[in-house]
Image (cartoon, rainbow, N blue to C red; front, side):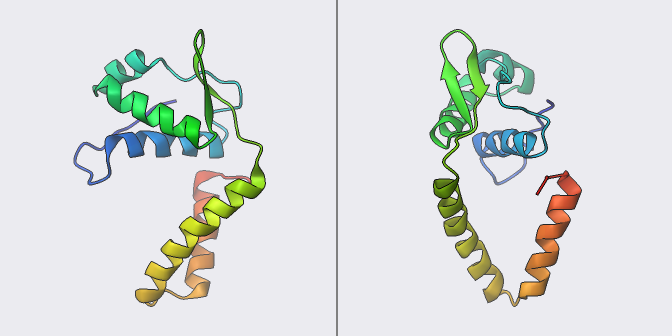
Amino acid sequence: MVIEIDFNSDEAIYVQLMNQIIMGIATSRLQEGDALPSVRQLADTIGINMHTVNKAYSLLRQEGFVTIDRRRGAIIALDVDKIKALEEMKQNLMVALARGCCKNITRAEVHNLIDEIFDEYGIEE
C-alpha cells in the first residue's frame, strides 16, 4: 500500500495516515490479518517522525481497525461491533450534514455525493 502525505495540508499528518489506512481497508487493498509496516519502517519511508506513526496506529487500534501484536506489529483486525460503529458514524454524519445544511446543500446532493464516493473508491455495499 502506498501512503501519500500532503505536507502542505492543514490536516494533521497522523490523521492523513489514519484516513489512508482506513480507505485501504474500505477498498479491500488491506485485508483483515494484513500486517502494516513497522512504526520505524513507515516513518522512514514517508519521511515523518516515528511518534506520528505511533499516534496513528494507536488511534486506529482504539477505533478497532488494528490490533497491536508485540511480534507482528500493527495487524488489520476489524472491530465486529457494528452497532457501535454505526452510532459513531451517525454522530459524525450529523455534524457533517448540519454543516452542509448551513451551506444549502440538498438531500439529493448528499445522496449523489455518497454514491460518487462509493463508486470512485470502489467501496462495496
